[in-house]
Image 1 (cartoon, rainbow, N blue to C red):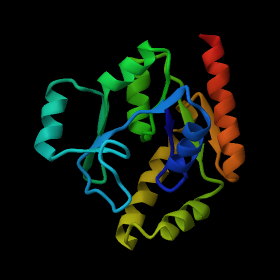
Image 2: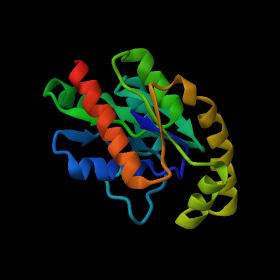
Image 3: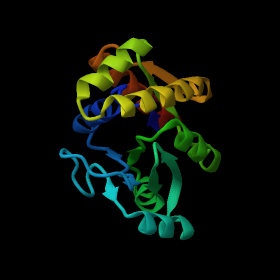
Image 4: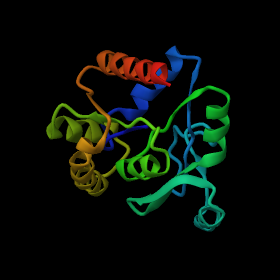
Length: 181
């Protein structure tokens, strides 16, 4: 599992890892948040209505789920299990709450926290995306404080101050952990 605060570069890091490794897949999460222009159904997220998502919760169709900034996010369990059963590594790009929930259910899961070099860099990255207004950025920074406080519960921490180095470090962690199995 790869997690860290919004704006730390999780998506970019994961995309690079996936583009360089045919034996790794990304778990696609479900969400109730409004799609952004760059989003593609079934690729970036499975977009669900609130009633659809709540029905999936009832049906225990999620490995984990959480409410983040007023929207539901969750990891559908079926696709993750299918890939793992076929020997394919799966990256879950999820928030800290979800990662810690999965670790309770799947102690064999490896948690990797991507940290920003500092809080100011995180703020600048969020501002630079241009996808959130100032109020949303403030909410994300507040959420980042809690996520950063959970970092010590992770198996590994990778600081994303240089994208290529962060990607290589995570690839090395994944390779090392796979060899332990």
